[in-house]
Image 1: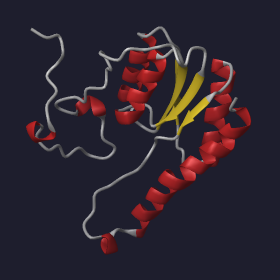
Image 2 (image 1 turned 180 degrees about the vertical axis):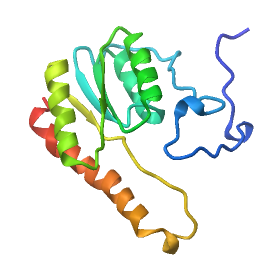
Image 3 (image 1 turned 180 degrees about the horizontal axis):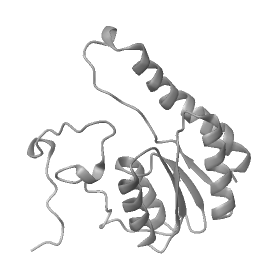
Image 4 (image 1 turned 45 degrees about the vertical axis):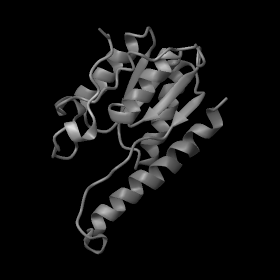
Length: 172
């Protein structure tokens, strides 16, 4: 008998069509993001990390992994309070602090606020993880509406640049 959970393959999981913005808490089956078999080594002890898009998916796994390694984390999220609160529960269960920062990486002032608040509340900033993204499925590329192209660019390019500009003076 093994204590490892069943890990389904992609073919075992039915397709899911979730409305935008999707909520990880509504996915069935839920993603296996608890890292229960991860063996931490304390590599980030005492570090402070800021993770955009940290409320779900890859961002949640990064936040949890960093917490297991000893870092306090701040997560930036846009709308999904339930997912953000679940991430905070997972991080705090590891004995680490988790700061929730709600806003939009497309807004430079929000990015500056995220960094300033992280530094003030957690006592500094050592790591920035630019993970927030926007992605929508469409038909042929030539038919993607201009509004969606701009949203993709603003989130996936400018958001990363705004966060890096705000964080760079604080990274040690």
